[in-house]
Image 1 (tube, helix red, strand yellow):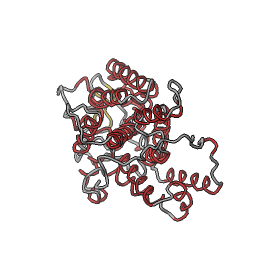
Image 2 (cartoon, rainbow, N blue to C red; image 1 turned 180 degrees about the vertical axis):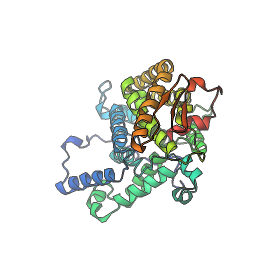
Image 3 (tube, rainbow, N blue to C red; image 1 turned 45 degrees about the horizontal axis):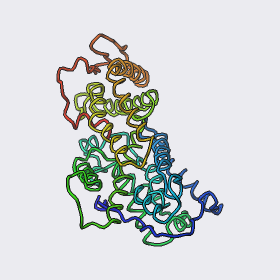
Image 4 (cartoon, one colour; image 1 turned 120 degrees about the horizontal axis):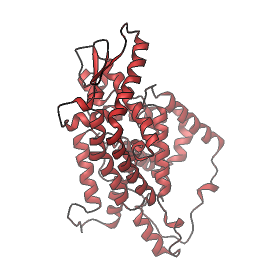
Length: 390
């Protein structure tokens, strides 16, 4: 955590009449490609077989990051303005220099790929409550995220990837900047740490001067660096929950996968010794609160930063539609998901009792799953609401 920086230094834009090499014409040695392929495979093998936090999720997040990066219009690709140094410089500023820096783009993709490697299927809060060794190792802060960085970085730094590293980062300074980007990006996926999230919001407001202040003392390059830093962090945050900003059937698929993972974590606790709440007690209202407090504001930020074009509008539109659809259908969906999960649980654990369903509860053995429509408490604490996404 002490490596997280408020502002990452991005390359200074230099005017040039010479066009840079077309990336599609760059050919990498077969040995480099083989190392890259092996690296991805090794990262995949270090993901656990969780219902949600698995390599399929990592791939989904990675593809989303690639999609968002592709939607940023670079200066050399923009056809609405003449190809002059002045217009190129302006578009570099307008896109915060992200598209002109291959190392940043690769760091975004790499961070997405590794962001949940070795995830245990349990939330940071749960690991703290259990007194897990890994929670003590990271002082109870961004536990899963810091562990993912350490595991993935150890793999990446193995001698067998030396040629790949030298190709990506020929200098020590570039390796340091790559590391900085990866750390910032992966830690950004910890949305439950209130201190970190508060700092990110302050940095966003400062970068886009939404705090009512004008920072005359800051250079143009420093402002670009601020904006680029917070934008790439928010891009990976959005990608991490991108299913909430996609078609309803995609949202439903991933929502149930997360639901099952959280239910398994709950049922792995000794009866009477539970340190977390039954997911069904908060899932329906929790999703609505999560859309309102995090997803929709995040989608609005993607739109407000002004560099992602129509895709940011699509993300916001789908988020709002999914929220409204869930509000209407969510209670029934939670009930059906609970029945499916409990049926599998009873079969796997060979429970002697059958599942009994009433209007109020679905009961297996001695543990009931109650539904949100029967919860008398009108408002859940924010920590309870968001803890399902840790």
